[in-house]
Length: 95
Image (cartoon, rainbow, N blue to C red; front, side):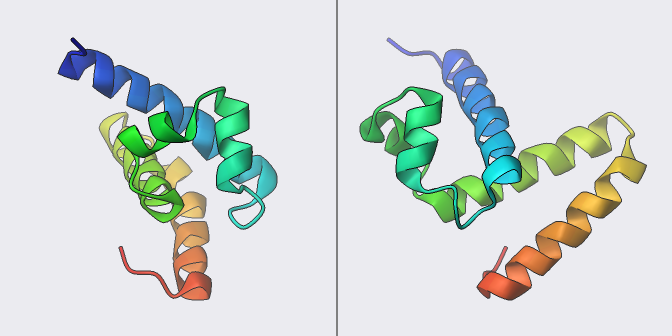
């Protein structure tokens, strides 16, 4: 049986890896196939943790925003927030 702690730590690991992929490849170029390949997981495992790529990107943003706030690294958050806002405007997405 998978515990919540294991689920959360695995999801955090995937979020960190996916965030890096988004930074390296860009959101549009980071296809689901590429993400799955780089993570070394199946499509089913991806969908176990994330609804879709958009929801995954939102979780990446939330995780890193909370991490910066919790660790009192707000100055590191400003460029990231600006980039995220531009991304949302370009994609016409909601938070």
